[in-house]
Length: 214
Image (cartoon, rainbow, N blue to C red; front, side, top):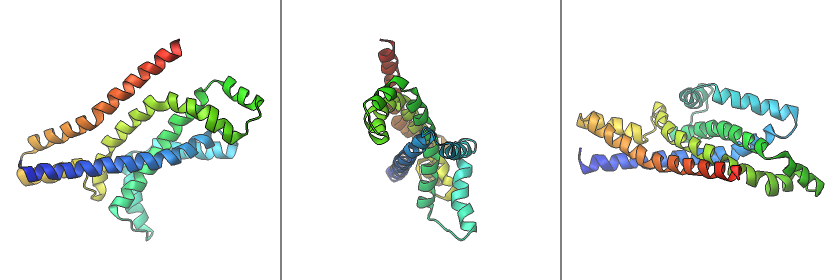
């Protein structure tokens, strides 16, 4: 495998990182809305978002991408592969992050909320200044763990022809007839990308556990 093939793999790695970043950022914004709805106390909002989470957690990501790209095309809404996978990953991430953050919000001691109520803070101030800062800290290890899974999940975007790292590896493998070497490099690139994040998440989890035990 030559330099040009390796540069092509790096191009795929770039799209993998960009797709994961878009899915995580978009999913984070929507996931926060889901988490707030799940803890709002409104039966309608809680049931609606619970059903939303159940759908995305109960079906494979591959199927979700397939439906967004091919399913919408059946009703006349044809999306570019890039747009389709970005939407698919955003929806997928919003369901998982929403549930992670819902659990973190509910893990904040009720005394904090009661104290905020006693001070007369309205809902927005209570969530922004009291609950969410603590919930975010609690959720960091799980959030980083999900980001790692999301990065690896980008390999499924190849179903709609999106050329990310794994798809780039398949293309190079077919050209060079050296699949073991090519996919060893692909695996090494995934490892270099994901392992520091996993290590960072594990360290955060230990710090959180130590702080809680004090």
